[in-house]
Image 1 (cartoon, protein in one colour):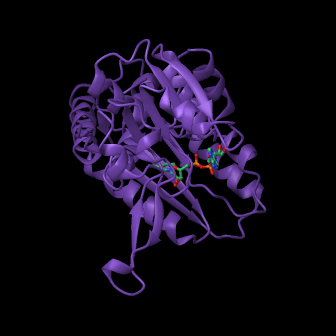
Image 2 (image 1 turned 90 degrees about the vertical axis):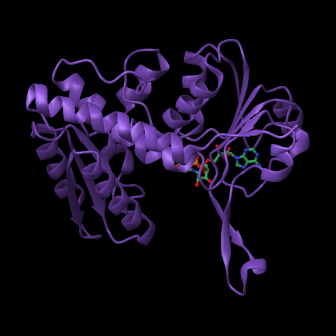
Length: 300
Ligand code: NAD
């Protein structure tokens, strides 16, 4: 068997198109322009790239983008004061504080100071609780993107056995909640799981979110299963030349693709969906703030 490749790049483009057409309608019919504020503290190079990309894509779908770049030595009280100001600003519908923060800043305190209705990353403790109890919430972008791809590929995932490898707060746990919300039977596996291979072999859906290059081999995959590879790992690629690197997922692509029914590649799978879902969450937050229905298919 050779798996269907789930093209996250193409799927993300359709999400962005839906967002852009909804933004155009909000402007034309309600004179509202959704706005996303991104706060970056310090000069971490990877974070700078992410923030630039988020800002560019926000503008491309017709939304307002505001970037606040703060010095690495910014005090907690100054950062909290900025978040208060953004919470109160009616032109800002989404607030994202780029993580990681410098060590002297308390990440939990900072994230929980964002108004839950504007928390487009879905990391605020209120949104975590709302998601866990099946109530309307802002949903973390990466798991939301995975759910959208699963729903698109399967139609319904109700009743399927799903194994999520990884229990982080930003991917593994919310992913498990979303799968449960769609009536999967969910197992969360992690570094202490006794027999990971056997656990994964039972799954109709495998979501790998570990951060270990190619750790899931094809012989762990049940024939026909759907593999969603969240991992992004940079490894040496001497075949490309001295000092060269390439990106791989947490699943060994060739061997998994030979057994799976469907698989997301790395790069070009889950990755592009994350920023697309950030845009989707921003338009959702804007609609909810204005008592309007969010666009269909872009929420959990
Ligand atoms: P994390 O380090 O916070 O969590 C990793 C999890 O993997 C932990 O819960 C741990 O228990 C589990 N784990 C570690 N070793 C294991 C093992 N040997 N067997 C089973 N489980 C094990 O990582 P994260 O933030 O959840 O990210 C996971 C991966 O997803 C990383 O590669 C990251 O770069 C990637 N990621 C991608 C996107 C995207 O947009 N595609 C977004 C977020 C994270």
